[in-house]
Length: 457
Image (cartoon, rainbow, N blue to C red; front, side, top):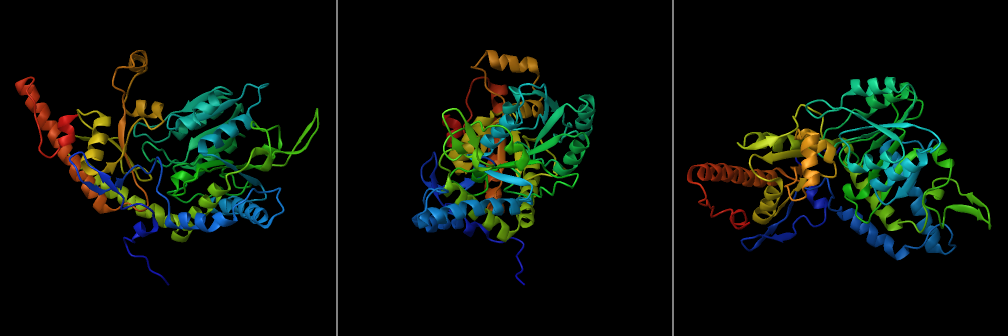
């Protein structure tokens, strides 16, 4: 039996990790990527599988040539692989391929929308904009509150379900926050939601690459009704996303995108739509993207998603404990919460964009800064009032609020964390000394031989 070491070398599985990036002072260093919550580098396997498939790539479903038949088989088999990866059952669910998780959630919003009814969607203040905005123009939307530490308040969820007395059609919730990394108890939420005859959508864009998912069968009270995720966050570029849900939902009505591949018959005054999922995939599908997704799923499955989660939990614990020791670092999420490898922070007295720029130009370290397409959540974490937000809206020249975000992938190392936290400690110390100097000596400057980008920008 193969025994995995405590720190297996996952880096050899990925493309481009040793790529050199330039520094402000000259020279270049291997890039350190702590921006995995945005997009991940590809597996070697993904690139190899794409190259092997490319000579047989062809248009699917309606061609009789060998390449077309082969490509069609690969594409349709992919739906089974996706369902197996997330514990979904093909008898009850359909897998629809879309561009990304954003398109998946938008598609579902159109499918569930009934203009003749006033129905309610509950979502949360933790959501990415992709799980906030699609609901607002079609449903009455209410928001589940969260606790002071950033986790979801399940008592508030149940209170709102009771208040609306069966009018809630859907509860749309993130599986893991792209801001704090907090993993919501999706099965506990599902069990509560189903007690009130509503359905649940889990936005798994951040969850799928980092933790096991089990949708569970329909007869289980805690099953997941709808699931959405994107390949580009799980080590597979080429632009593909997935929406999974009950076949019966997609048998009803017409698709929001109409065209080739969606119909059985068209006459001058009639349309007979094809069965799902085909009626939901207008135009020529992204077969290459599907091949990349399946290759990444195979790579992750061969490692084991529990091992993936455990590896990234080690990185999270190691990094946050080091950050906690740096004077001037403000952290926003405790380690006591169940989280994927995401750490939001700020350096007291410094703009978030300045911190990110210094990390990049002084250390070749990529992080993300800003609100991460989750502005309401960041506003609440920073305790920014509605009145203060009006000031930002009315004055586009005011510096925008935000955070710095480190987010880990399977391949990141403790050595990369050590380099990053050492530079952050230097930045934080420099900022403290600069502030003290300026408060004592007015407009005179304060410089650092090491932090050249800081001095010049």
